[in-house]
Amino acid sequence: METSPAFREFACADCEETFDADEIELRCPACGGLLVARYDHDLRTEPTRPPLPLARERRHSLDEGETPATDCPTLADEIGADRLLLKDEGRNPTGAVTDRGLAVAVSAGAAVGADAVSLPTTGNGGQSAAAYAGRAGVTAHSYVPSRCPFVNKAMINVHGGEMNVVEGRYPDALAAYEDSDGARFPVGPSSPYRRAGVKRLGYELLTGPAPSAIVVPTGHGIVLAAIHTAIEELRETGALDVTPRLYAAQPAGCAPIVDACGTADAVAATEQPDTIVGPLEVPDPAVGSLAVAAVDETGGRGVAVSDSDALQAAVDAAGTAGVELSATGGVALAGARELAAEFEGETVALVNPVAGSKEDDLLRSHLMSQGI
Image (cartoon, rainbow, N blue to C red):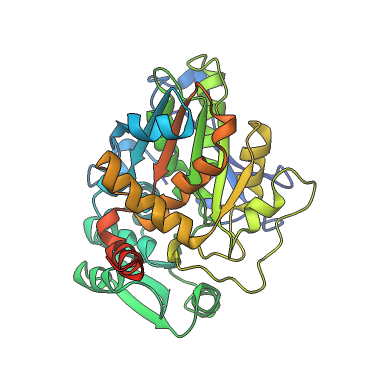
């Protein structure tokens, strides 16, 4: 694979074994641990731009990223913060933060000559993978649970992707994926290329006056882990002299990462996950260990919120601040409300991972339950 000039190696987060880009796909070949990319930072030509494993000319982009961070003074006043910024990842090409990661992961598959990529997904990742696969000239195979939103299923097909709908929830889709053709290049949530792509979100938030705290709706933990990597890289280059606290916000019905934050325990799978927020119903998160480390090492913590609080937060944001939060993004605002005592006088950033219009049925049903 043609790598970027600054890329040095992949290293296992568990056993510290190192590998070239051509030697890996998803996890450490030696122990199965998660892989992290390492760079020679003195070879970086743009210290405030994220280094990636893949050479620039090998990337297939749809102009993802550079999403707005909207100032929301009414929401800031509510939680006692000096400023509240909403980082709206719904402005990405397919309306989700997954575009950032799949742009790099699918490009990596194409770069090594793969004809097809494959992943298990709650929905948004499958739509992103299909879009970027079309751009790269490969085929995307997505394994989605039957409860995946219709918009994701429809757009996977519209983008030309192959879709396998599996009866049940995400773990059922994951099991079907694991039993599938292993010859396809894997771009699932464990992929280090996906975290590398999402890392740019952290750079965008942190370049310039950095927020004191960042609240992230969390499923697999990819976004938290990626922002933490951005913090470490920017500090290493001297472009960041503070460490924002990272907060994991999850639905109370599926909060394995929140449960592990601040403890010495490994992330334990949620036995009976139950939340209406489908993108976050991930009972056994693929990047859970890195997400917990991101929270604990930055002095943040985890917060679990009810589905009803998340839905109401999204509705409130639209009604009082004019911003369209998804139900998934509502988890961040509901979490910030729970954590308000920690944010007094600070600048707080919330991540909205999904466009509000992709989860409008959930928000409308919430209003209807109130007689609206």
